[in-house]
Length: 254
Image (cartoon, rainbow, N blue to C red; front, side, top):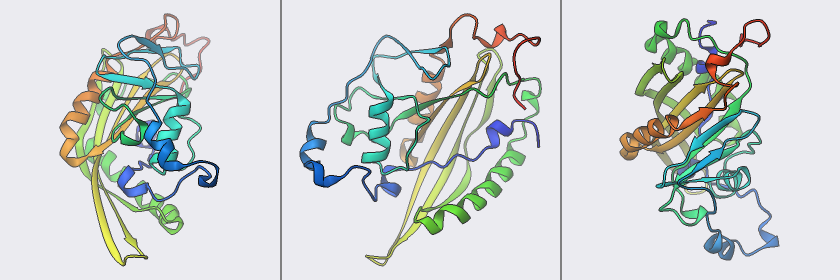
């Protein structure tokens, strides 16, 4: 299936509740409780900020959100949420109401993929049911690899927001209802955690900016609305916009 392979690629989404099992820091080197109690969020709020990664993209950060850099984003994901190492993340947006990294429960993580120019000629032909089936097959394969390593089993329950392409803004948005389940060998208990995984891809001349978030099922509507609002605040520098594509010189995505 050629069309929208970049959408169908399965992305493992970790959650604080499901994944906060280990720390990526050496706890012998510092007092973790003292560190967590003073790990203040520092970033940009209420002004434009560069996304970076060679994207040529900027985001107008609203006053109710703070953009934190790659270092703090990775500390949030890897130290406090227990995610695996992620060197591709560029930055993230967290609520300004959160003043310490350890108290952050939702973040909109930003990436850039220099995949080349992505044609949207067939955007109107996206079949949500077929795409869901493909994602579920990919999830089964992913579980075969990750569950033996101690990660929770992941299941796609369905769409929380069906794929929606905004041709004017050149962005594709969707959200999935996910279920994570695992067995705790120490307590003998099973746990299930249901979440919403939000994703948007904003096309540019040489690739796309991606914003990802995961939220509790109870907070799904607000997370989706926030993600949609933030995605509309992203813009590319002149020369790197989608409409600046030059078929004679620019590489196109497969």
